[in-house]
Length: 157
Image (cartoon, rainbow, N blue to C red):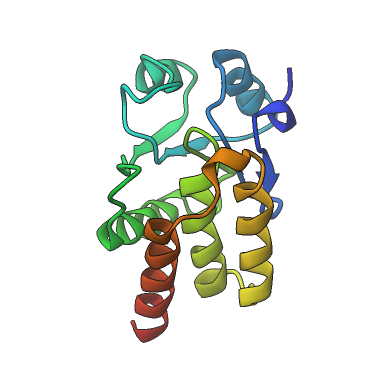
């Protein structure tokens, strides 16, 4: 079991990786591969969420940040909270996840434009790749509007 086996795993750079919901064994693999922080964007109790995730990650020694984003109602403040969590993570190796790497791709692609020097084309490529992995969950107006809003607000601020 390896981190790369997480559903929709997508490395962003040598320090940041993203994915869907890891299993307990995949979290152990993440620890063994040098990850020291986890940011979870999925609400607790959501289908496929890992029950007791925070306790497990604390027992494994991870810094844990939970920013629950409701699927049908993502908020710009959650992107702000994500950016603050990334600032706290600093130079640590971090795994950012949700259930299928959809919420995360929306957030990390926008973060990468603002903070990692990514082009809009790079960011959109990541989103497209991940959002086409499960055809019945294709990009919708809620999430496209969310991406447009947080990118515009990031550029303005």
